[in-house]
Length: 409
Image (cartoon, rainbow, N blue to C red; front, side):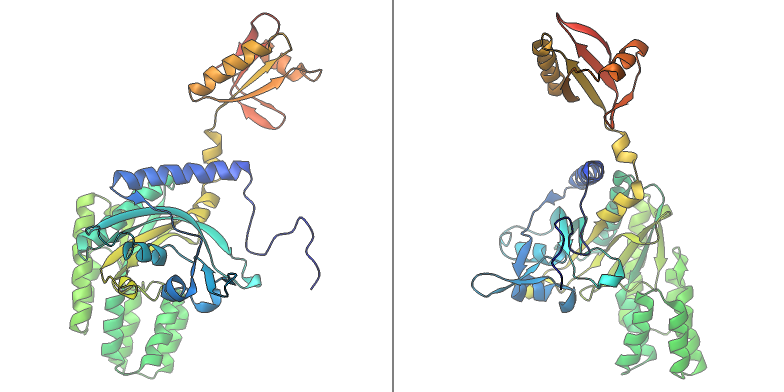
């Protein structure tokens, strides 16, 4: 293998230039403020964890974990999600804290990828975990907060699809008793949203017509509250019926929040993490083909850390939201340029400090022979202008005794 060039970086990671970082921090700040207003406190966990604890507990498949050895030969992993690390903290450092616990985060996570997949190996997530509450109220809270967080991030058009893994598990066990391989094949198709493949798999199973029609009818179970009523008409076990009843309760709470316009029930939803045990959901923006948020209930994870407790939560795909928003956050930045000559330096730098204390973004620069652009701005009293590739909304010029002129906000 040839040695990488000095400007190259590993596949799947990227550099974020100043404009992108400004947008990313804008999203992070506004979303975390939204979460805080709902009572969620921010937590930070290590980038590296032990493989035998967090790595094993993570839902990420072993081949997608970034592993490394420390100087003692112990296997570590770069965190592949935030749910397992937070479960570790709740079960240790926060063991004496009462339930429920509401925690938020903004972090980068890492997943090994196939080079040809075109996916990112490092990306950012902003999310919450609500630990210690098994109710439909808790599930509805995280869905409603996900909606509020997307709005805070600047995403205007989106839909949240909610489902329940208990319904599909119960339906398939009732229709295909003991046929685990067939069940997993069908679930795999639903997970990949491959509905054509799902129908093809059903035909290969050579089922009774009534059973095939019932399993194929799952694909039509997408819509509003009426979907719950339709699902209850199917031949499902008590576990599946309880799952639908739970979804109905969630819908009622979401109705009270006034957010049902953003939500649809989708009983083909299965969730892409093995630790999901109940309600799952994904959110899609109108202008992006990938989910911008996903979450669900995972009641078995904390038991792996010695503190069994129900839990639910979600993660915003912050990196995808960054791509979706374009230049919105950057356009909101206002900067003032303060220029000066040797005699006006003192007054100029004092003024710059005063403006910064007021929260104004200020750049200072000594006048030189290339000041014709600035002179033109001063003469025309332009509201905004670009100088050396940077956009400004105000200009102050100090020459000799005091301010010579300016175009200020």
